[in-house]
Length: 240
Figure (spheres, rainbow, N blue to C red):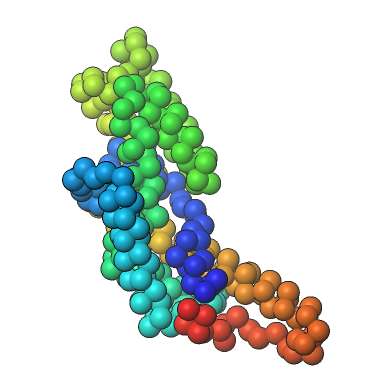
């Protein structure tokens, strides 16, 4: 059961800045589709509803993981792709966020009430650092430079309600995206790349956990003469 729990909850936050920075001003509406309005509930009724919803999602995920073969081989691109495919199925059937959708939602929820562009970018930077997201191409510094340029022209702080000023800033961001080779139409490709990176990181974590568990078991008297098995040979379905 420990393996299955990690499959559902362990998520390495591995992401390239190409996806993250493009989404600072091009966040797809679909990532908020799961935020449907719900009727007001009280006390025990609300708790019961939450419990039943979580239980349903968990059972749906477990049902999929009991059927699909997962090979713990992070060095094998085919195994990584298969694992990513299984986890995508889990998310879709159990109505869960993908990692990129989770990042987008965090950005949206943390920044929606921020009035000015600079605080927005500073909050975005804070989110990036807390989630361990790299800024591989220096896009963040470019965005702050662009804001500095716009505010210098305006001779005042840029408010997000200033449509004209924000249009100028977003035009500067588009120049940055073009310089970095980022196109909005390529976002699905970037998201797929992100999910593969996450899948590989999760398989590496599973492999590490499996080896540590076997090392611990080998120290016990009754198992000291047994050889450790290759994590690739483990069938996770047997642990669920």
